[in-house]
Length: 309
Image (cartoon, rainbow, N blue to C red):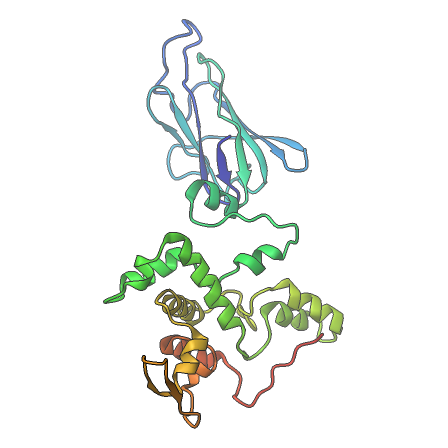
């Protein structure tokens, strides 16, 4: 069955339009204001309820633009939110039926109107599909800062960049996920946005309510009054992902700081235990550039990260 994403502007296709006198001639020039035209959008919602909504077609620049395609096929645009009578804001099965004087009745295919991530995974191929039993499991398993597409654009401007572009497509998301875990291990200023919003609404919120709000937002960002992930956090994620794809291991990097000599015969390695580790490496960040992006968001060095348990 064909799919359409919910909460987006979409187009539905129906046809061919056949003359009702001889039952074979294709009607290829039906205007949006043709005699007797009636259009209904029928939606069977996920809960089983069925609605029939009449829409008035428009020519161009309207809510429901009607466009002739070819060979008697037509397109009807349905808006996400600006429509006078119908909006594509309900999950379920969507069908459009059309009547025009002198033409056999028309109907579109039945479209499955699905969540955006399902459409992106199964039609656009731009995101993974994961349907968890636990509502928070998807965010915990696949929640990342930024997107693969944005990372592609970010590295497209990088001179002498090989690690990201040379990596297999499946490894891009894995690298972003690993980078997100590394970032979320740090101690950031302020509270998660979910906790901030709770305390703004109720400064006397209980510990249980705060814990619930904390758990409802799996990732550390957005924080405070922000409702989106800061640009610098996304860039830091891309830089760390790049370093990981380039073969850098934060643990190995930390160990290598103390090496003052290394031999191959008899596998000899000598460490200088007095060397002070570089700041970003001791904090588990394999990229100095990423550390510069992250540093302004961190609490003071001497601050202690507390968590309610």
